[in-house]
Length: 123
Image (cartoon, rainbow, N blue to C red; front, side, top):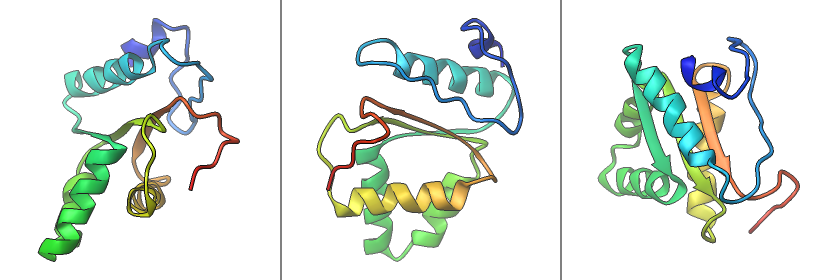
């Protein structure tokens, strides 16, 4: 995609991009650029914060529409979850995030932004 080439990154279908960037350096803007490039190539993008993802999954549980919500999310070619760790999150949010990552693994492109180092775990 054009967006990440500007940052000196190569495009590889089966690789993952894991820049280690501190707070305030443009991770969300980078993810927006990836999403925009995907949209310009007529791909579908689903954009969430952990809070909106958790709310969507929680609402679907109440409505009995979990399968329909999951199908809606997975119609996207790129799933973006932005800003993990900015706010404390509960068990429901953590479970929603885990379920999305687990279901999308090796099937969909996923972009996740976070200020938390990979070694930090919050409960």
